Length: 175
Image 1 (cartoon, rainbow, N blue to C red):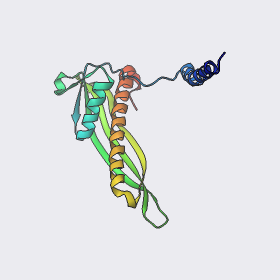
Image 2: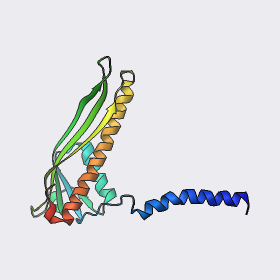
Image 3: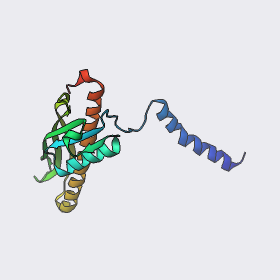
Image 4: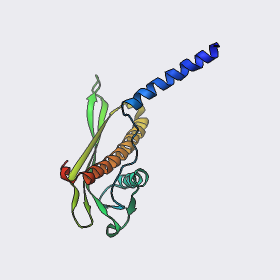
């Protein structure tokens, strides 16, 4: 047996051992959200970025279409309120802000075309902590916008998962 063959075998074992461990414990990547509707209309007053993230999550993460007119939809997702916030999380030793907490709170409900509630008035709240430095203010502003974009994308997927869970189990609709 050559040294190269032994080395390849050892590297192959090192690579496959963690993967087989993950497979054995039931780990799998999140796939598509299984929403039992054919078309979803987004109503209410979501911000344009949240509306776009919801539409993207629906079109890429489900087999559902986005309806422009609520009359063409099986499910109506009504975004009643969206609040973005930023609060001071910590101060440095000389009294300057050193960290912020970014928050997005979305109030929504989902109901079918007949008016039956799928998800009653609910709220999803997401936070991210962000370090702040006075020397890199422009970079911090860009980082804050990136955090908010990722947070909105997470919220869109969480809303779809909540709708899917409520549609599958009608008895557990109070979140």
